[in-house]
Image (cartoon, rainbow, N blue to C red; front, side, top):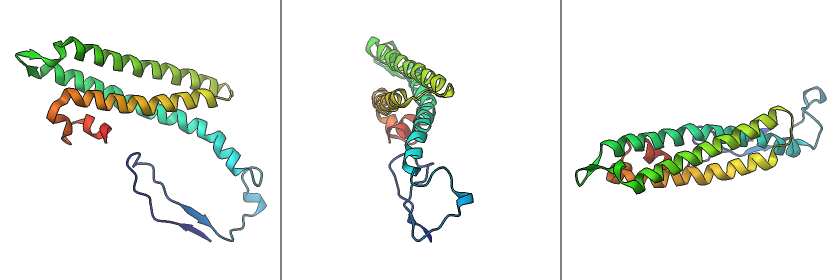
Length: 163
């Protein structure tokens, strides 16, 4: 039969359940077979391209929101009588992060357009996935620095992205 093992508790992507599924002595009638027998792994690898693109798209808005929330916070938070955002280093860093997010969006748009046309997007989907993971960590870490102690509270989005 089919046995689903205990759900795996993960660090992130908690909305996507992960568990081991065991198939023992399971028979599938020919009429219910999806694709060719023995090609499931190949089909899954091809489907991963779509999943990678979805993951990239899913990460863009949280990164943009964290950057915008950090801009708003540093605009009102004052150090030595001046808003933190008036510090050129802070201002430039937030602009740099926003630029990187926009570049990632452009890569995603190109990959999706190629995918919709029926092209193999393994290279672009893999590049976008790699950049997304690294950029998400970079946005979370950089923005967290500008929040000071407030960044470690559960009241702000940056702490959630950082986790």
